[in-house]
Image 1 (cartoon, one colour):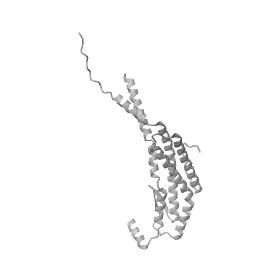
Image 2 (cartoon, each protein chain N blue to C red; image 1 turned 60 degrees about the horizontal axis):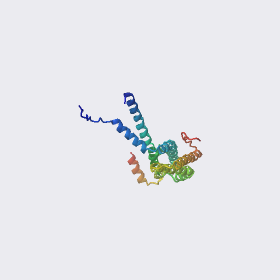
Image 3 (tube, each protein chain N blue to C red; image 1 turned 30 degrees about the horizontal axis):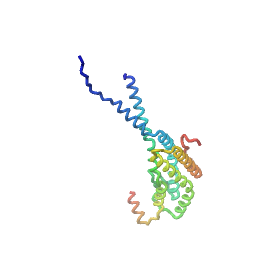
Image 4 (tube, rainbow over the protein chains, first blue to last red; image 1 turned 180 degrees about the horizontal axis):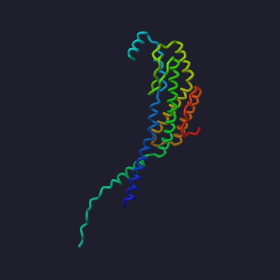
Length: 68
Length: 168
């Protein structure tokens, strides 16, 4: 085995490992995002309902103090 | 005179170990599964951009109905603007109900898209022997669900981006 074929082998291995890692990671995006999309609309509705909820004057004062 | 055999110590061969590891990796990886994952990733990235835009617009429309502006960030919808702390009147609550009714078709399409995405993700996650036809059908359903969402959003005056690489 001469040094040229050695370099070529190392390069091929590097590319092969890179491809294997890249392809092995490919499903990660779709699976990760699928977890993120649960109940998005329900969360928005809950946040908006919280704003629309009737408040007593006392509760409103307390919230304003908390915000400040 | 007969020379005794020379017992040379074998030199370590790291390249051989690396080659064996690579061969094992190649044997484990399923090219079909990876191709389907690559395609579905491209579709999901595009669909997510449209989904985020839809949710942000829905958050804002809901808050506008209550007399304020909405900011959608990290999955939460918060009131912003000078009237953020004002009381909400009964008329505004009625307006919110009206806005939600108008948005219902787009939100149903959003739910369909979410279900398609989850089905595809489950298929890819549990695929020792991936059924290529079923996976492609799942990707097709995802694209179709996104088109429904885009149509629903368009009816509300919202233009969603087209999916990159998908023929319209």
